[in-house]
Length: 179
Image 1 (cartoon, rainbow, N blue to C red):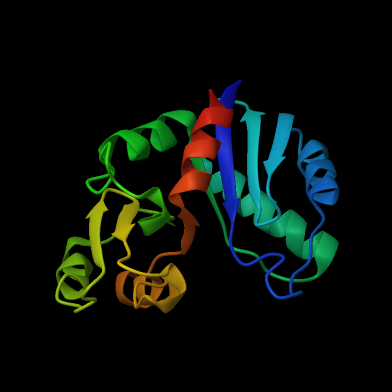
Image 2: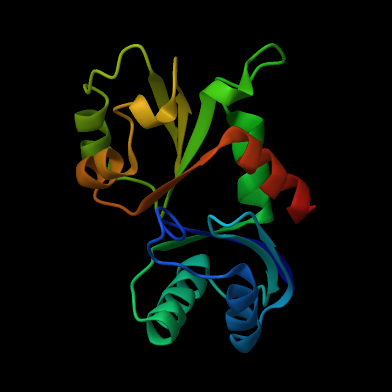
């Protein structure tokens, strides 16, 4: 069994797409996963899965189960324990003196096409900054993320992949829970 992290986009936001974490745990159990933990109401799940299963396959299964159970679509991105550990280790904005309230990580469902990367790199997001490394968009926001141009929609539109963002405190907690 391998530790995985599923990150759901857009649940329990503004009273829409409401899923109780207890119900999400039961859904994951019914899919055959083990040692299931949820973290906060925004849809973060740490669990054990058969190491033969691919992340995209797991994500598709969770998306289908949510659609069948709750009758709405929720994009899901699944990553391994090693992938979240690598993200924590490779954040170019995460330094010992960084204010982690300014840091965010947008998870992409897959590595973007190199041609599309060139198109997004010209987007002016001043004073905010971003750096794309593999399937991660590391974000530094001068002020609030909610005021930033660096949204999930921007990355999805430009890169043509699914995206969902977590603040750095949540990323660190998911990494900790995956150990």
